[in-house]
Image (tube, rainbow, N blue to C red; front, side, top):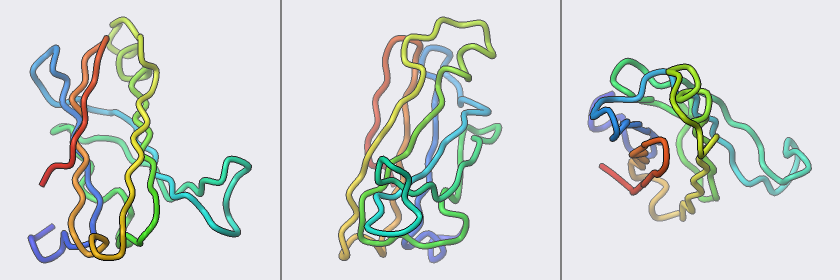
Length: 126
């Protein structure tokens, strides 16, 4: 993705801070709060799911679609990642909700997750 391609894009990066390296093979599910058809009983519509690459990244969480002004939820399946490595699981998943307004929908939204077995942090990256 070039700089001009990232406008309106949603990306992520998962870093395992306990190991000091990217977290490979973490499943990330992306949903949008729905206002109509397609939503499940919780009011969320699944937009897709992707697995982090060898660098711990997903470069296009929306599968070529652009952000809209709405609330998105990213669910990181951290339990499966830790279980696969034989490590303790305290947080089986991490859910992050972000609100995108009309003005910021044209911007690149990068949501990194800094992860360890007993803690995590996230922020809006660039």
